[in-house]
Length: 326
Image: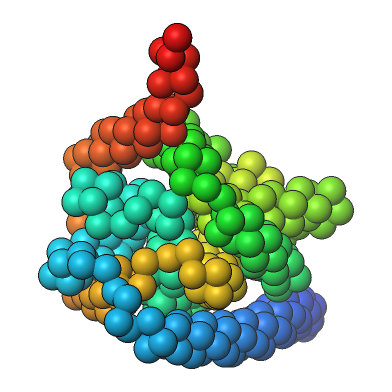
């Protein structure tokens, strides 16, 4: 029996060590859940404010709606947000639809994108952002940076003339196409194991998300660029989702309010896309859940390239015309 006692003591010590790690993990998870509760609460409050501002503006200008067909607007809103939930960004899709069906003037496409997709994106965030495996300070810092960037960007974009919007959106769509092609060929960074950032990497992450938030207001979807940023900084792939989803969900109400206050959006399109797009998100998230999207992604790439080229041609038309004058 003399040899048994040390074995029991060793086992007890191991159990104590394991229990200590488990308790630390439970405490960390508790802190994360508290942060998640605060983040969700703030998101709901911000979206509520956005909804009130949007509702008042729609009622005030209900007699000035465009002549666009509400059935077409509903159809494209459903399709774009359905596939956005499954991984194909809605901004590029809607931009192509707007131009193909001549539904929204180019000058107010950025504002219409940010306003009309706001509530569907928030729904996506509330549905999927239930498990956050990311260090709380990193998450909050990057969410705030994206939101501030969007407010700054929206204030600038809302005042841009049509030709500038065409130039910037055409260039933005080219960037989106390159990112999608890179991901299809497996050329995107793969990430590391970290769940949080500190020091210079944290600063780079905050500045990067600020820039991406500002660029989203001109029509560059945030998902793919944010994922690339997170991976480049060495964060784990599982960290990318809450950061990019949370960034979009927080920045769009903030940017959307700026566009609404400036009147730089299509009210009728935003109304019907919001309603139908929200239904598309719910069906994709709870009923369909996943689809083979490889072929569709290549189709989207070609559609984006075509839309980008037509926008850039429209942007440079005056310059070319001026050069042809004697």
